[in-house]
Structures are given as structure tokens and as C-alpha cells.
Image 1: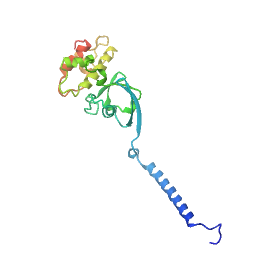
Image 2: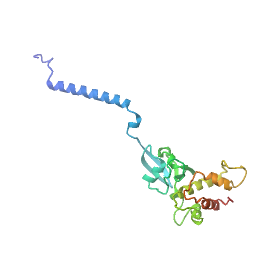
Image 3: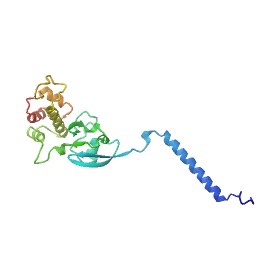
Image 4: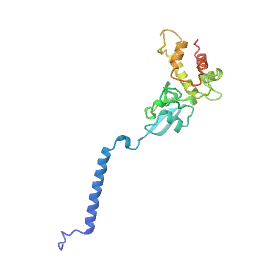
Length: 213
């Protein structure tokens, strides 16, 4: 074309074509993202701050990470054991704000600002928790795998007794202490011992509780 105002250079045609292609690609990507299921998207991350054994810890975790895996894999507190990973054996029991929980059933992102106590935080060599000392004195373990969960659960259980919390086996709500043999079995029923050291475990707990189970 001879008309300078109507003349379009080859360079301008290429630029316009590229811009149109880029816009089409972006629109296609947006449409594909809208159709992509959430499970196929990259896992999100979260920053969690919580108090573990008296120390503030801030960690970045996958939002699917359990409290158990946070403690073991990221904080290297391997005293807390992974047993069934389904909340059935009690090996992963820790104290959360003073109450016993199965850490395999709780996501780390559900515990921001919480106070977590593991077996490492209960005592240390030369300054054992009374229950740790009792388990040693009464031989309340064999392989020892369930022992951290047993002790943490017993700590939480004895606190429940002090607060007068009944169990499903409590026949008399006015009785003190609430720790008959049936009470002890029911209250510790969430903690399994494959070695079968239950008699010595019960003796260790009872010696600290001061009951007559």
C-alpha cells in the first residue's frame, strides 16, 4: 500500500499476533485451572508456632502433616512413637495443653499456640518424672515401644483424677480417689502393650497415684 497511514509493517503484524496468542493461552490456562480438582493442585504450606517442652518452636509444614510427624520428623523428638497411625494403640500419646491426645490424629496446623509436652519434656536423667521412675522401679515395660505413650497417658489420667473427672467405669462419683482396678483399666484402655506388661504398668501407675488398684 502507498498510503502511509494505512500501511502496517510486518513487525507490527507479528507483535499483534503474539499478543493475541498470549491472551488466548492465558484464558485457556484459567479455564483449565477452574476444571482442575483441588487434590491435583500443589499442597499448601503453613507456618505454625507452638510451645514444645517449654520452648517456642516455629516450623513450616505441609497442611497435611500430623502433629506426630511434626514432632518426630521435623523437631527430632523421636520419643513419641508411631504405632498404628490410626489412633488405636496410644503409642503416640502426648499432652496438649495438659490433656492427653493421640498425636497421629491431629494435624499440626490445628495446634497454633498450643503447649505440647512429649516424653522428653516430662523428665531427664537425674531428674525423672515420678511416673518415669515408677516404670523403672516396677519394671513396667518390656520392649519399651509403647512406654512413652503409656507414661504420657498416665500423666494426663492422674491429672483427670485430681480434677475429679469420672470415667465410664466410675460407680460412685463421690468416691476418692477414683482409681479402682476397673477404673485404671478403663482409663488406660487406649494404650496397648503388645508385650503384655499390663500388671507392672498398673502397679507403676498405682504407686504414684497412691490408690489401691
